[in-house]
Image 1 (cartoon, one colour):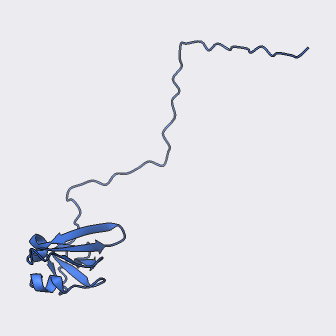
Image 2 (cartoon, one colour):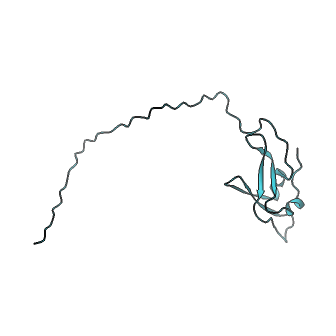
Image 3 (cartoon, one colour):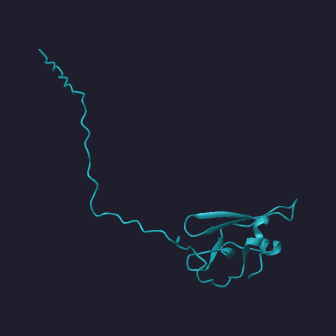
Length: 123
């Protein structure tokens, strides 16, 4: 197991630096990789407080605070085979038929009335 990120290490992080999640894994067993997305925010009044904006993939953004520092690490953990997303056992695959469903038309009892407009002619 890799060691968790400390408060001093978190304050020294730079934009673009990689962090690895210690528990969450990708489908191939590698650790989730998070990239520092903005300057690390710190507070003068409370030196134990820190806020790190991170990004993973194309659309996933998150914020790591001092409470979640134990979930990430600077070191890349070992690959665990089969630790990613697993298929649900005893689940039959859904087979879709090649035929499109037939469209059913519901007939209405209401008669449609056609209203003719009178065309005005200039005289």
